[in-house]
Length: 301
Length: 217
Image 1: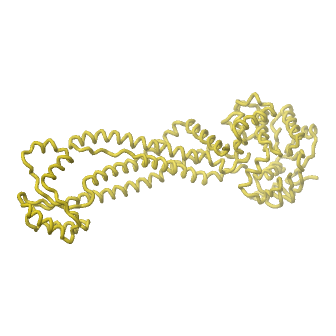
Image 2 (image 1 turned 60 degrees about the horizontal axis):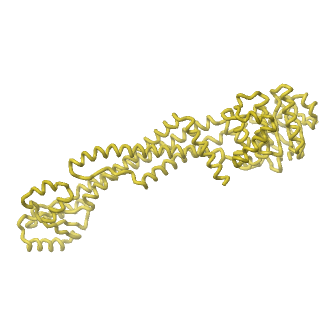
Image 3 (image 1 turned 90 degrees about the vertical axis):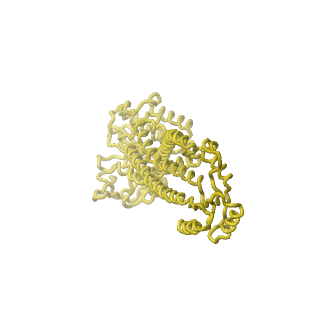
C-alpha cells in the first residue's frame, strides 16, 4: 500500500512537472512522435502491400491456356500428362465458364463482361510446380510451350517473387530506420533527463542529506522518461493514424477507378500496444542511462 | 551514541582538517562544538552524517562505523539524524509545508499522517501560520526555524546543527536556542557547532573546543 502511494505520488509529481514546462514537453513529445511514426508508417504500408500481394497469388504458379476448340478428350489427355510430370506437384483445371465467372467476381469488370455475346476465354490448367525458384519455373514453362494444343503458357507469379524481394528490401529498410530512431529516442530522453538532473541538483543534494535512497531519487526521472516515451508513442500513433486516414481517402478514389476494394490497413490493436509499450520502454531506458551516468556525481558536500 | 577514536581527516592536497580526535557523546547529551572558522567543526559534523569519511581512526554513530559504512546504509543512518545547516539548504521552488514534508515522503509516510507531523513540527518552531509561504518570503530567522522543522519532522534521536545562529541577531538566536533546549529536555542528543560566546554563556553545556583540527582539553 505504502509502495503504491509512493508511486502514485511520483506519477502525480511527474505529470505536474510535464505540465509546468508545456512547450518543452510538447516539443520533445512531438520529436519522439515524428521519429517513431516514420518506421511505424513504413511498417503499415509494407503490410498493406504484402496483403495485396498474397491476395492475388500466394505461391508461384503457371497458367496454361488451351487452344480454343480443343476437345474434351484432348483436354483429359493433357491433364493426365501434366499430372504425371515430375516437376509438377498438382494441377487445377479451370474451364472457360468457371474462368468467366471468377473474372466477374474478382475484378469488377462485371459491367463489361455482361455485355459480351460469347465467352472469349479459353480452357486452362493452373499448374503448381514442386520447385518455386524462378529458374526451374522457367525451364518448365519452356518445356510446356513445345506441347500441342497449348496456346499460351504463362508464368503468373514471377512478379510476386519480385514483389516479395522488394518487400524484404523494404522490411530491412524499416528495421534499420526503426533501430536508428530508437537510438534517437533514447538519446533525446537521455539529454532531457540530464538537463533535469542538472537543474534539480540542489533538490537532489538536499534529498540525499535527509536520507533519500538512490531508488527514491531515481524514481521521478525514470517515470519522466517512461511517460515522455509513452506520450511520444501516442503522438506517433496519432500521426500514423491521421496520415492513413488522409491517404486512404485518396486511395479509395483511386481504387474506385479500378473497381477494386484495396485500402491501406490501419494499425491493429496489437501493433498499437506494441508501439506504445516499446516507446515507453525506450524512454525509460534513456532515463535509466542518464540517471546512472549523472546522479552519482551529485553528492552533498 | 557518537564515539570518535583517533580520528584523522586529510583532504586531497594534504590539508589536515582533523587530527587525532577522540571523544564520546552519550545519548541525550547536549554538546557544543566551538572554535574559529576553519577549526574543523563542519568537517566533524560531516563525518557523523557520513557526508565525509575519516582518513583514519573510527567514527561510530549509533554503532555504525562511518569509515566502512556501505553506501546503501547511509540513507537509513541519515534518517535518524536531523541535520541543520547554516545556509538552511531549503528548496526555494516549494512552500514551507512542502519543504518540511520531504523527509516524510522519503520514508514513505501516508499523506494524512505526514500532514499531521508537518504541522506539529511547524508549530514547534512557531511557523504554523506560514506553511504556505515560500522560503524567499521568510526572514533569516524564519528560514533557520524552517530548516529545524524539516530536521525534526521525522523525530530523529539526534540533531546536528552547524552554526545554527551564525547569521542571526541575538533575539533570533535566543529563539532558536530555546527550541534546541526543549528538544534536549525530551531526550534528543544535540551537537551544536557555534562560535557565539553569548550562547555558550546563556545556555551552558559541555563544549568541545577545536583548534586547527585538534581538540583542546
